[in-house]
Length: 234
Image (cartoon, rainbow, N blue to C red):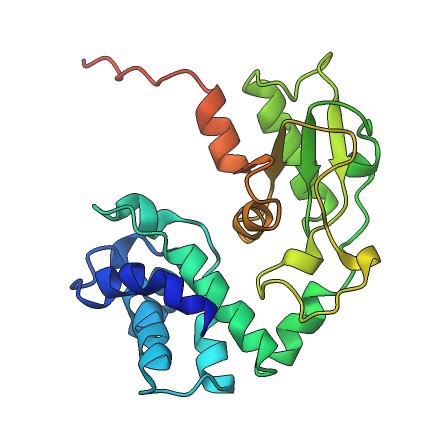
């Protein structure tokens, strides 16, 4: 039995839809490829589940075109969780040994050093997942969060977190996993987490089984910025 079986209903919702969320996918828009649309990716998952296509290197490469940003789910009238389905399919591809080697190597590559991230305090209620973001992106993200007036602004302390490469875009590594490479819940007991890159929040949510609120940078900002007022006319 495949882990994908639990997502049968979500796959059906996408494969029978006439690509109504196509415009919301940044990858499909940037690549101008129908094979990168959420509908196409979910159709490939359906083909794998029904045996019409093998779970091979070609299928795995196709599944890699989702960043997990969640825009298709936001645009979907059903709120279909495409990212979780594709993450599950990629984890299956990794277990089958067909995940793209270059992407696996990237996930295991230590991220660039960030002085801004290293300067954060290690205790407090907020866990910051910098992932592979460089120092400029970390600094910009911190400025935005502090300007939004959220709990990231001093004197509220922020908790520093290690990169989540072990739970990156290809899902959990095949067992057994060395404990040193697992990215588990923080020992200091933070209540929330923010991540810079869209590929980080959703595997982190799955890995921590709902024990920690994980939000992308844009979600953190949206929750903390006051509602925008309409611009005056004239």
